[in-house]
Length: 95
Length: 499
Image (cartoon, rainbow over all chains, first blue to last red):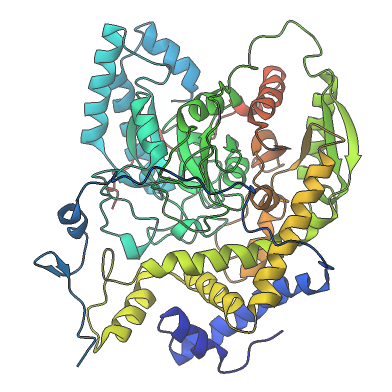
């Protein structure tokens, strides 16, 4: 199945990745080829098959409800593009 | 440095060489090879020499383990505390990891000396190592060819003798395929054996850390250090500790593989396989039969669908995992934007390369409203069909053999404009990631123009020791793993500092 002409703009918006008009043509061509590859799956009969979301059907492990992490926010925030007073800075979200 | 880990370990104990001398040799070879191979992104000379001095002290005091003093390298997708960890991406070009991955800590505790971080396809997405922000890695056997990917830097570093062993990660073949294309051994363990803590996530249900080394014994020694339960990874398995070298003892039998049943799926021997690959695999199977193994035909028709299943599930998980790169908490942030939406979308447009963007977009598509059932859920159902076929096949055989990749290494640039053709390199490797079962690649021959060929051996869950034993027996009577590439690294090259 080929993507609709405006599909790249929609996916780019959902994925929060800027894609300009020139780039979009090449991206669409390659995505169309990938979708043709994965469309192969539609022909397979999967009636009554339980989806496999994980390599092993094990229960997620539970642990004791105790604090195991230490406060390292200063170390971690050294990696942030912009911080102030222990807070991450982003453009204004609420007017 | 073409000796194995086991040989270097003996030499260290015999005082034939010190760990500092080994580290210096490794660092010199890395520097000399960098301009040709581009195998490393970051070299940690100061840290390596400090660790080597500690290792020498441990060796002198008798407080040493098997891997004490052995120089290694980590794929740059594994977090290394205080050392840059880029994932081959502009997004993390300047990111210094604030903690160690579990396997990194385990290998450090085992006494290894970390030389540096190896180049890779960006966020482990690729089969040729051409998708790195830091430039492609080149194959030590012929620098015009790719080393495979995504652990291409680790594979090239071991093949060229820059380090005797390295870590990799395997999401769809990213340890085994580069091992095959560079003539070394690479093991993808059972999912859950090695913790994913500190492995920057690509596809969480498939990502598996594992070793790359010259031979099966070295892979076993590395896995002994890497494996183990870790409560910080919810999918890490809590099971008894295994010694993966336990079956690798000297055998006096002429038929050490007597009783071993090797399954041969028709799906691994069909069209599209390079003639020299087919003939090398056939010769390797003859070699295994000569050691006492028998072969049996098995059916795995679902393997034909494994690439489409993989290229739904892996991008779906990637689109979710990589949403964390938003320019807020770490990594690249765009310089110019008007509002937070633009900040996100420009940051991600600038920070990610073309293949990573494609996979995020494909993942976004297959998870989006109206397509989730048709693609993502469908792929998960076919994933179970494939896993069940393997479970059934292992009632008739102990291991499954075939080529690791349909061809030997291809020329740099040959497939960069056709993602689907690139994806089909993974046709024989992705099934083991979908099932979670172990698989390894060992060298078994060369093409007429001197490029290595890999034999893939697969087993059912927790079959690592058996796989390593089969590989070890094969390596006792063959010397493919002893072949070394032309001396790309002995030529003095003006060392270009790794970025």
